[in-house]
Image (cartoon, rainbow, N blue to C red; front, side, top):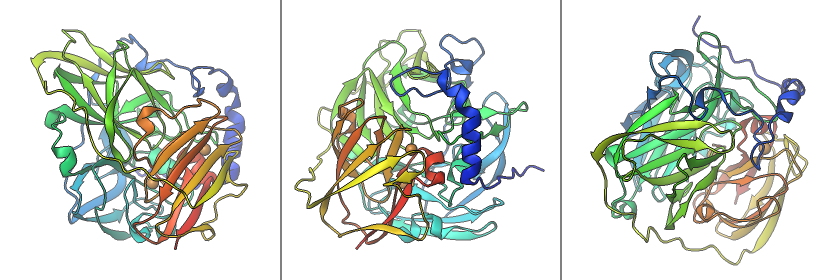
Length: 466
Ligand code: C2O
Ligand code: CU
Ligand code: CU
């Protein structure tokens, strides 16, 4: 039978797996975030085997669009097939694309053997269509997600959000990109068409037949091998010019620190909530689970050499850029990108402690409990702290926020964390302050750790905008 049974993991199961996994954790000692798994394997710098062309999912306008979650057989590159889960048979799912003002309608069918939802990560939408776990679609069931795009250009994404089943469904293949466009972005002349490529980066494990498998660990799942757009050992042919990479960390539990193998600068022009005010030049950047980075990389001086997109935490070479030696996009990066009106003068402060692997302010998630109420339209300061077991990427549904400060740990707000964010990384010892104003919709919202194992174990809370 093709169907992969996904038994519901209880919190006790997670704890048991965690105990078994402790030996492996100690072996790490890598970057500042100490990701855990040792570097090496397929993506090792200089590794030998042939690389596969990067899969780029087709781009679709989601108007009356049928989307199905189901078991599927997908090609992970070079004819290596995997029996797993997929949206519309694709891994990642189709790249959805819409513009500000558009009316989206996605007719979803659940052909899994368990409940699921489709959550629109980063989207400003009413809670009825946000894929909240209370709105589960039963196996065999359908739901029509309909909403209007009321926000600026950005890279968002869609993934399941069922109660205590999110981690396994995402790890088993359910995720896709959702690109939003607007006139500000269109006027900038950033690389487009073949020169704009979404990169969904994650890690994975495989059984002996090459099928994607999920090995849950309460401390956060870490796979042994990187995947970019579902491709094992990917490569991309690049012309000599600028490329725009729309990067999403779609992993359950792995933080990446991206760099080019040459150590060269790249531009960061945007993040979760769209374009920054001005581009920033970096030689490396963190991206944690659920976060997005909008990178512009210049291959004009590459010559015939290959360059790699590298993860400095694991040492993996994630993607090989193979030079075509053809001329490419040569227009320069604009110096001014967008206007970001700053949030100021918060009327109150709320404090949130991310405790252990399953609690916020001492409490585990309860589907039916609402933990706090936020008045509509008021600026608030939210302070996120951890007492360990980080990294905890803190994610708020339905409304982007602005990061004000980080103390402890890395101790800085990186320039690419300015602008609008919906997920911010809390590493061990860190306190992060954000300003947020819920001025789009009243109703039920979620805040949670985007390490999906922590989310499923209860590091999540309902709140209400009133
Ligand atoms: Cu990307 Cu509540 O999730
Ligand atoms: Cu979300
Ligand atoms: Cu966490």
